Amino acid sequence: MSDTDTSLEPGIIDQLWARLKDDASDEAAREGLILHYSALVKFVAGRVGSGLPRTVDQNDLVSYGIFGLIDAIDKFEVERGFKFETYAIPRIRGAILDELRALDWVPRSVRSRAREIERNIVALEHKLGRTPTDHEIAKAMDVPVDQLRDHLGEISTTGFVALDESPGGPAQEGASLGERLPDPRGISPEAAFADVENKRILADAINRLPERERLVLTLYYYEGLTLNEIGGVLGVTESRVCQIHTKSVMSLRNRLHEPS
Image (tube, rainbow, N blue to C red; front, side, top):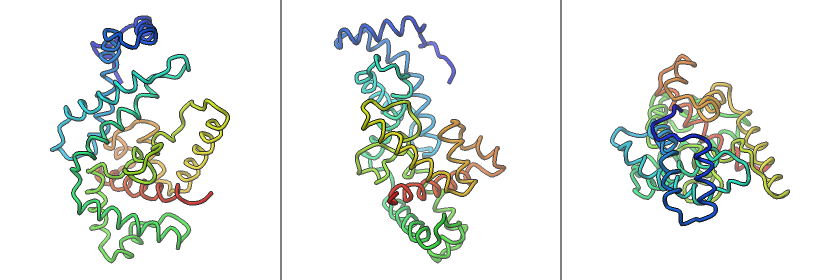
C-alpha cells in the first residue's frame, strides 16, 4: 500500500500513541492516528468491495471501516510490540462486514443456495474423503456444471462466503478464519497453545484442498493479490477465480468443523 498525504513520520506516530496511552481522552492524538491510518481503511474496503456488486458504494464501505479503525486504535496495546496494521485489518474488515450483514442486503435466495451447495460439499467430502470436483457437486445437486458455477459466482459477489466469517457463519461469535491465519500473538501459555493449534488445523485443512484451490487462497489471503491478478497467474477469468474461491472456502469451513 502506497503512502498518502495523511502519512506521518514514524517518530510522530510513536508520540501520538504515547499521548493516547497516557491520556485516553486526548482527541487530537486519536484524530491524528485516524488520519494516518485512513489509507488502511481504504485498502481493506477496496479488498472487500472487489467481491461485491457495483451497487454497493465504496465510500459507504470506507465509512463502515472507519468505525473498526477507531475501535482498533482505542483497544490497541502498543507495549506488546505487534504491528498495528496486523491488529487493525481484521477489525476494520469485520466492521464493514457487520454493517453489510446488518443491512441484510444479501438476497434470501442466495443464502439458501449457498447453504444447499455447502450441504452437498459436506456430504460428498464425507463420502469421498476428499474435496469434490465441480462435476461431482453438480451431479449431486442434479444441475449442469455451468449452472453450479453461475451459482458460485453469484454467491461470491455477495461476499456471503469468505475467510472473514467465523467458521460457524455470521451468527457465531469468535475468531474468524481470516484471524486464524498466522499472526504473532499468544500471550498466556494457554493462548499460545490454542494459537499454534488453530494454525496447525487451518494449515492442514488448506493443504488438503486441491492444488488450484489452495493456490487461490494463498495468493488472495497471504500474498494480497486481487482476483483479477490471480486470474492472470492461473490463466483463467476473474469470475472463474471467484467461483474457485467460493467453493474452496465452503470446503475449508467444513474441514475446520471436523474433529481432529
